[in-house]
Image (cartoon, rainbow, N blue to C red; front, side):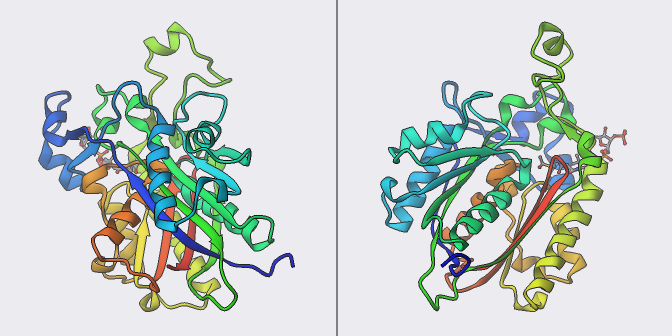
Length: 331
Ligand code: ACO
């Protein structure tokens, strides 16, 4: 019956390309230092996709790992959602390429653009389709090849971003199973859209030589403003998740926040007096991988024995838009 079902996380996986770009490498490219980057962001290195590979290739690796973890086959998947701002092409969607590469049935497959909140938005949408009883197994992916949209002459942005992918499979939970997604909350404040954009190449400013000459094909960001709004938005979303579930911060085992900047994460944790020992921080290895950052950090935390089955986890993100969101779940 519609509205009777709950979703559980039946499998997770992630993928980082092998090639690494360290802070020391960046010191040779722009006027910056390893010390400045670590102090201001916490980032030490980021991973870079080799030429010839695209977002769907990273998504494929992460999805195969999630499928193996869930013990499901590609033909069991009923829907694919890919959160990305760096799709293989403007059209068709990366999700369609992924569907073909994985060998799924002709299931509904689409991309969603909520920038760094893309994975939270994707999980929330998947959760609704499972709750209504429409689908049983949904593949949600966050995948980005951001380094191709970053200007390596702009020290304020090029130090931040990296490539990677993460995938989860949400499946219909058995009756009585309490390892489920409890709630999801999503927001967007379009009044703050201009704080973080990729200004050229869309319908407003179509591709042209002038776009290339003025570097409008690269990410443009007002860092300080983003910082302030990120802390406010993620703290609000966490509060909303806790209140909706009548849960105190002490009852949460781990927060897995979007991995943009360690200082942003510390400021959010501080608002709840949440100890940093219970916050997953993986950005030292990845930089900001936008929609891939939460599933990458989560997978790493599971692999390293931090997050365990049965624990209560709070996910939260913010991104260009400005979008934001939170999910409370028992893993
Ligand atoms: N190396 C050395 N110096 C630098 C660098 C760099 N890479 N970048 C900036 N500086 C300089 C600035 O020019 C400035 O110099 P000035 O004082 O002479 O003017 C000084 O360092 C301080 O600059 P601020 O911008 O005030 O530095 P801040 O502490 O705010 O850190 C940062 C900058 C890291 C960008 C921070 O604002 C931030 O993390 N903002 C949020 C960014 C973010 O999360 N973006 C993505 C969000 S959404 C998504 O994930 C897609």
